[in-house]
Image 1 (cartoon, rainbow, N blue to C red):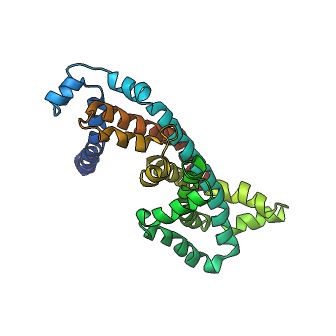
Image 2 (image 1 turned 135 degrees about the vertical axis):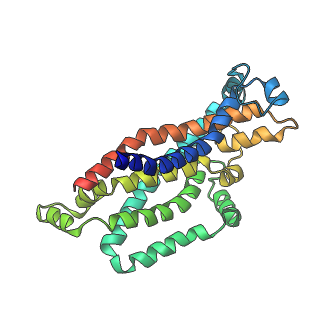
Image 3 (image 1 turned 90 degrees about the horizontal axis):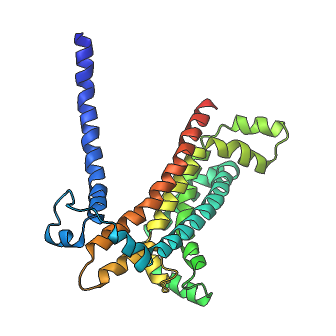
Length: 278
């Protein structure tokens, strides 16, 4: 009995710590959600009240229909999905090629690729602007996606190289003996083993592209092509801040990332279990 009590006491502190950290992490998002359904008068008179005296969805109606945030949200989803798909397609083949065909220089090459993150984004804003204008891609989805790819692909290759290095060479040699070609081995043998890493890289790329602000602000001028991160910034340009609309817009921005993560989460678990079996 004493052993059981000691075990309960030993588990209480870690679980209590995890609960406190979970509450602290979730509190800002919960506060934003609650504030987004408060009436404008209550936000102005008593902004620190936790529970709203009245629930209203007027701020969501204003953000989605009057301010056109639904269109901006669609722009962000298109740009983020295009960046994610192209990044995964390029980085998986690049990382596998580095590991299997350039193993000696692969580590130094990935370190060179990740060095692109040493440059502050604002430092490359002017060169990118000149290039986009000269090739006619300014104020286009394609131009913004290409800019995002220049950052996301090197980092994704760096991440995936470490995963592909864990694939046993014996498995690929066995598949080669059975008649599989290089591309088939990459697609049906090596990539399924590192699926958790591919999914994690896709989530990281999608969220980064969806939330990116600086280049979207510089390269997209039309309101009909503007992503949601820049559209949210435009709400702070007025003399009187519309806190209700800003809170509702923040919730609208968070929803696609959460939905994308929930849709792809089961693939992470499936990939982990598949990798453990192999």
